[in-house]
Image (cartoon, rainbow, N blue to C red; front, side):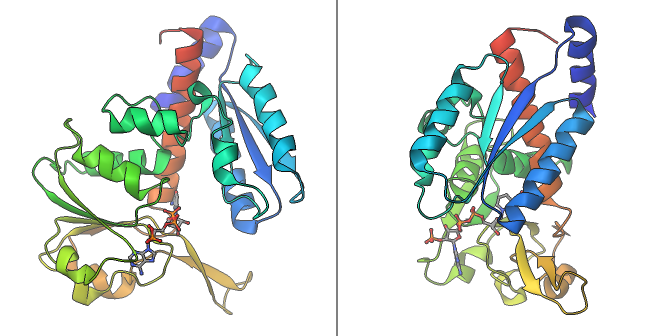
Length: 281
Ligand code: NAP
């Protein structure tokens, strides 16, 4: 892995390693599992990963204080707050409390604004991972029709900005659909690539696709499954089993976008480190 070898160079030459702090509030089982995944990946790559855990009753003020301290701590290069936060805490207030040059999730207004302006600093990891996947399979985004289902700040909106940007892996004609879109299939039937990020199983079904598109399934949903020890299994947002015959490529859930997202997060942490230390690798 390129990230790991670059960190090895930093460790050898500068006796230092990048540091990421993950702020985790409450006991949401999916969040706990995502944070464990991020921690494992960091350790493997040589990034220090510190988990700051808080009870679900922590106040917004207390969290802001923690973030202010982390913002000032020069030993911390990247900060992420695991979402969702409990309902009593305003997510946007907390995200905007992270200083933009440590916001490796790319969710502060400044970082989203820089992306919209075509001069990105940190791009959210999932959209970056989706773009990377398309580039790895040598898909020419230039002039292609890409439909994104979902317009969240975390996935759909930054992804639309990336893929429609005037850049090498951009220049696509992007249509963003959402829960108010009438006749979703009118758009998906014309698409070369469909990216689904709704958090709803079976959002994309076989009647909604034509001409063997590429499907990228971002969704992660827990559905009950008594045959499993933990009582559930993970599925994406597409009717995977039925559409697989009519697509040119499709990402599985789990194992598709998820691991790519983590890799892109590590890349952002490394970028935050090199930006702040001015170390050239
Ligand atoms: P979100 O904030 O809930 O946004 C969902 C979007 O989907 C909204 O824009 C919503 O429309 C739209 N939508 C919902 N139902 C729809 C429908 N039936 N038809 C068309 N559009 C519909 O979710 P998110 O944070 O973007 O995450 C989406 C999914 O991706 C979740 O399952 C999440 O767990 C997963 N995810 C995975 C990764 C990964 O690394 N694999 C990373 C991030 C997220 P409105 O705006 O009109 O409400």
